[in-house]
Image 1 (cartoon, rainbow, N blue to C red):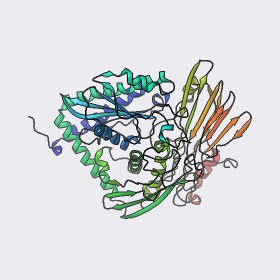
Image 2: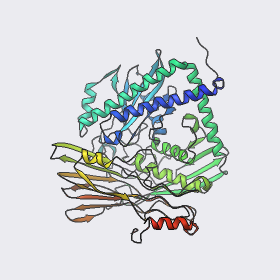
Image 3: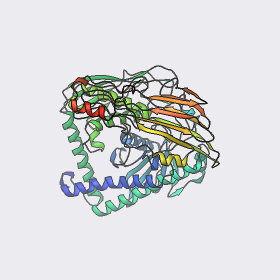
Length: 556
């Protein structure tokens, strides 16, 4: 029997090659997932992730550079839940699961987990997730803003065997497809996820064949140690102390009152701890967050602040997050959770940013738009004779930072996803985008202003459709720091039969039935400003004026 390899004995060149090789395995999984999926939200917007996880505890070994960061912590928890729930996994099996309370997010993020065997022995787990545009429930697209229990949000799937020894279970597939809309698209997405895992198994086998399992395992251990050391080195630059801040949700979609995410961040040497126990209690509507999403939001927040730290299980070791029992960011069955990953997670990150800005303002930034802008439109296209569901998310402004203005039309804080091309959506669905533009005047003023949101308007061309919204920052815009001003808040308008309305809850609502010619307009938030506006460079002010970024009537 070959002896194990000392991690420190792996030479730097081999270590780097193995590190990039593991990432490449994940990135190839991402690409297969992306290119073979039927849903534009996966194939065009990249709302998916693939990774490699330890056989011992489900901790992350690697995740592709193309995967959504919010799944950094989530997929670890998913894999652990599958390991605890199933002791009958064999080579060639694939588990299907979307249960939010078992290491999940919302029901639309459907996960698959495959045990990976090398030379007859379990070596690790491969896992992925993809956002399915629909998993049933009360409204097309699943973003039901008035749900009061998980069962109203869609089909909830515990860890079940979708593939047994390489053969997909047709009865299980039939059951799943019978409970969701537009089933012909979902079978394509199901096969894409299975194919991505199969690609990962082939590529990982090739890597292990080339370098040997013992060397790869030693390299992984060394990479984790280095990641931990780098994270600790960053944390040691933060002055010891406790820093507090709050971020606010507009409402839970049912009770029209704000929800508070309140955090106390304690730094001691190279350790950092997060306490959210004074956040608002569980809410009636779907803006509760499950533990896996709350934990992952903290990890992603730190990744935004210290982007150079390689992501693996090692970088999480200095981080402690106390489970906030009794709050809306520690949801338990049967609390509804449709907005947890796309919206609540971004308020958690915003609270973390605002707290640490008090300690290290030279490494922080003002608040970003902080909403995914979830819009779902479902109906039947009479011209094609087909049902459809369009799920769309949009960008917004990022906050100004210590060395420059914020990014305009940046993706949500939770990911690297991009808005789907409007040309693709117009080909697939009976809609027309009449406007898609930079939202002038939306940036928060500051020495370094925030980035701008976007302003888009789409019209239903034929048939009848039902729209739903699950967004945020409609009451107040993303806050500035160090004297900077807030960005403009989110705004939604709906034109029906010649009358313009706005949702009661400002940033969320459902059941808006549209007829031919009706329209929806969304104006996404701008980022907050960094530093006092009066300190802004005169040349930058003149350039903003010349470009028409701040017309007098832009702000309402």
